[in-house]
Image (cartoon, rainbow, N blue to C red; front, top):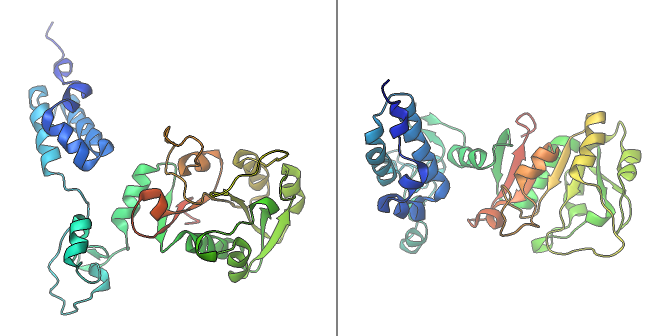
Length: 300
């Protein structure tokens, strides 16, 4: 009986130990390199690639993989500062800091058709890959804008139910009550500063409720005689009434990280029942100022 050729497919740890692959992990990140390794192994399992060629295929794949999914383009439009092509080229100092974003890029243009495309498509795809629990993603200019958009879409002219213990003030003097009021929605405060129970939310829900909001107090902690409802508990009553549940993570994470076990993350929040998660993208991703909206595709 002949040997199954799939047995000759190199193991993942062996492929990751290759010098060129190790260097690529530092340049591209572990997740990207592992996905290229799995792709080559899967091709070999399907018989599209000889097992003996997997190693060379992985080395070639990591060598040719760019650090960014953005593609440089030639701006022949006659418009120097072109909003569809990344606005102005970066200065020399900025190019040194952000090589991947230098010059004109296909930020809002479909190169296959020459037509305007959805802005930030590559960023959206990367966010959804990093947080599969989200049905769709939206990137805006900051976290406050993300919250304003979410509450405007869900509760303009109606009520936003939120705990009194979560009426926070964030950076640059943004106060949650003021942000909500600017959307045309009305705050329906429940509970007390230190203790808010599930029944407090349940008693406040009604025909005028636009959404239920759960806010993570990123830069302070309440300790002692305290109580709060979890997202999973809130989803039980929100789902029963058909009311969207929004979780504001502050900065947060895309998925759990053992280095910061107490920091909330979008994947866990969405799995627990949040319909939308909003967060500050610059703090979360370590990039330029941004706000993120993740969650149900129809709501996004």
